[in-house]
Image 1 (tube, one colour):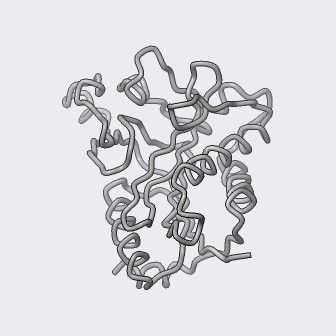
Image 2: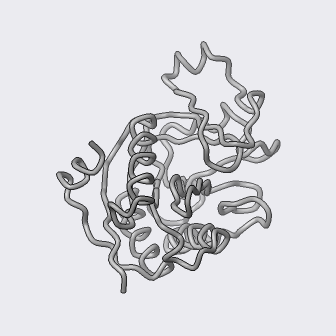
Length: 226
């Protein structure tokens, strides 16, 4: 089984994580680093993908500034979403030439990871064809947004585990009016912890993608990202 280095980065400002991903994606394209998985959280931030529209951010800039919410326009697919504390985020830097050259299957794998984590907490979430992510009825529990360049991925999945605060009302999630975002902690019938969700996500990722995750030394990542 192929080994993939996994870095647990804790809470990282979105702009910093974005620069790191871009750097690692380029290095992966050049064959200078192996496949990587970044596990982290972000402070409150709104991100807008390639299909995003400004009007899908409902709060004016002064309100966002008061709440300390940044806005970033990025290269991933999809519309607008929110990231914040209590959300599980995985960013795979993967060369899909070594994983079947199939982006749709890769996105489905990221959805399957989130479905398995939800199921472990007693929540039977589902896919919504045409709208990447996982759902519970009309409530969105997790998002997927990926950017590929030269077959190498960046961005990834974000699963709402226990959002504190939940600032999704500041946006039109994924550009879909009438859709609400929910956390596993709100819909599960048992206690939910972010730490356990991270453990389950790593386990599910390893099984679904068919790789062995090995810890990445912080010094090694620092050298790569310099």
